[in-house]
Length: 70
Image 1 (cartoon, helix red, strand yellow):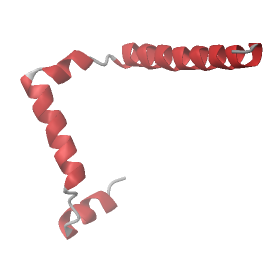
Image 2: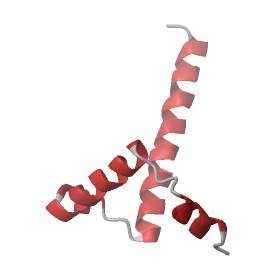
Image 3: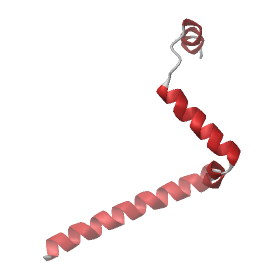
């Protein structure tokens, strides 16, 4: 591995480290609690959200409701 490849890998490592650090800092700032996803209620909520992605609601009532939100 030459110097250019090492420098490139080091830059990539630092970049991903900064991305991870920013995710952690942002999570602390907003009070995120990722451990709550592992409990029964959190897992149920997460699965409900994912199920909503699989079967989105395009009913006229729902579309009218989101179309009038301000």
